[in-house]
Length: 112
Image (cartoon, rainbow, N blue to C red; front, side, top):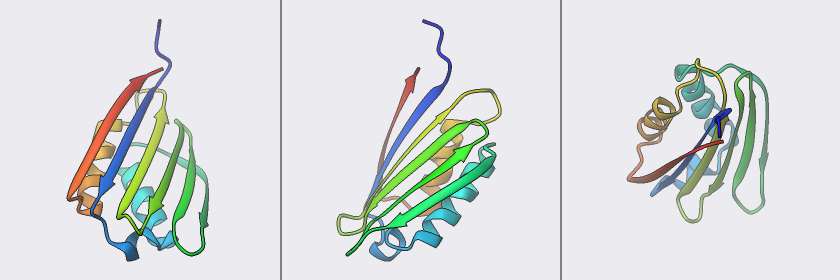
């Protein structure tokens, strides 16, 4: 099998309720991390749930990034699928850890 892209999975725990329940903050932080890791955002959409939680997606020139937050649990998950050489998925994970000040995170990579 010749992979056509990389799926990078990320889960952070121990994050602030307020951060995880604020769509504008989450989108800004993720947008910044994506750009620093070499991605080009071409569209985005975010939705805040009641009573809490946020889901968002970035359409990237390189493919896409989706995230989900569970403020009541302090959990953020991010999945980013990319193809091409410009985006660096592992650098993106490192930037997420720094940006959100993760107490604990897990990652995984799948070649597709």
